[in-house]
Image 1 (cartoon, rainbow, N blue to C red):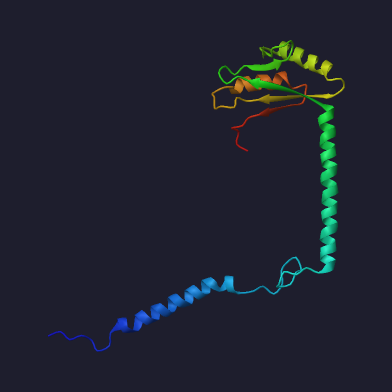
Image 2 (image 1 turned 120 degrees about the vertical axis):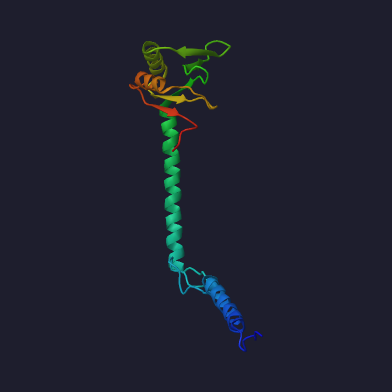
Length: 173
C-alpha cells in the first residue's frame, strides 16, 4: 500500500509563494508611497516656493507677455503688408482656378497654362498697391486622385517667381 509522505512539499511552498507575492506588490507600490526630499525647481517637499523664486517667475511671465504682444503686432503688420490670393485645385480634374468678384456674381476662372498664370501674377501685383503678393494653393478638401504629380510640378513652375504655398490637408507631416 502507498503511504502519503509525512511532510508535504505544498505545506512549505504555498506560504512561501504568498510571502513573495506580498513583497513584490510592496516593491511595486514604493514609488507611490515615498516622498521626495526636494524637487528640481527648488521648492521643498510641501511644494512651497520661496519669495525670490516667485519674483523670478513673475519677471519671466512679464517678459513672455511682452514677447507675445510684440509677436502679435508683427503678425498684424505682416497681414497688412501681404496681399494673399487663394488658388484652388479642382478635385475632379486637377485644374487650377481662382474666383473673381468682378460684378455681382462671383466667377471661377481656370488657369490653363504658364502664360495665364503669369498674367494673373502681374494683375495681382498691380492690385496689391505695394504689398507683397502671396499665393496660397488649396488642394481639394475631399480625397481625390487629383492633382497628379505632373500637375503639381507645373503649378510649382508657374508660381516660382512669387511666394506661394500648397495647402494639402491629407499630407503627412
